Image (cartoon, rainbow, N blue to C red; front, top):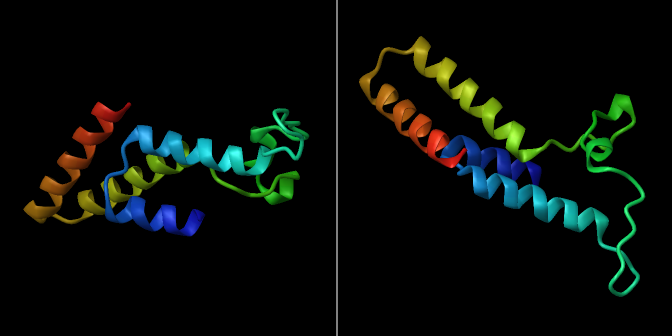
Length: 100
């Protein structure tokens, strides 16, 4: 799921609400309890999203990943002077500002 999310974030401007919803669904998947009506959280979400070498599962928070990808895209656009790239960057920044 993470690879698909990353690909979509590079291809499309992912709104902040959608990134939060993806994180919510991932948390729900990991914390779904077998008891009816009661969920036991044996591990925190911060621990799950910690790097593997720090004892976590290495999952990335979509909200943070979204901002990092926008930074990568901005760096690519700044290194290329094409007007089309500038227009694309400005549309992404506009969506990011409205989404936060």
